[in-house]
Image (cartoon, rainbow, N blue to C red):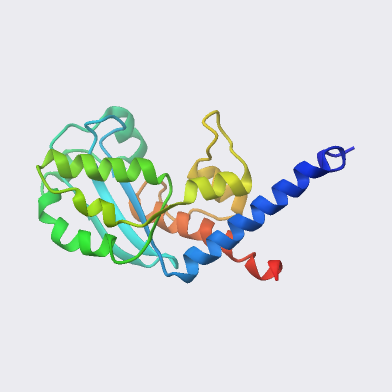
Length: 203
């Protein structure tokens, strides 16, 4: 006997939840949201952005820059994204890109895979350079990680799902080097679109 047969009410709840996530993904695509991703110096409260990218939901690059942080890059983070301080020695720092970046980030809703993390790192980066963070209150963010975990199911003890696992569940192939901001934006966009594409079946 399957779970659906043994617990029919659970199957109904799961079906309703999946339909809500499909509708939500469709809404995000319809509202022409941007996708944002960052690579960072680490995970702690001093971590900063070392690469930031924005694409549209078709994966077209709108903005991409590497940034020189004011703190070292943790070895664990460097092992993931492969970005070194030496490689960033001629790159701009946060104050040099905010005038171009901020209007972009508040112009449309932002889809972010793990929105809490990326927005925290952006805020920390701004504060590290004594820059204003009040504009972040204008950001309309949507969390693709939460959407994916509710649609496909959590795959870790935190009750979430990684972008790699979400892409695998969606049947999306990562085109390029994972853990680069642009490729992660494009992968996130493809995952959200794969869920949104189921919307006609709800009618």
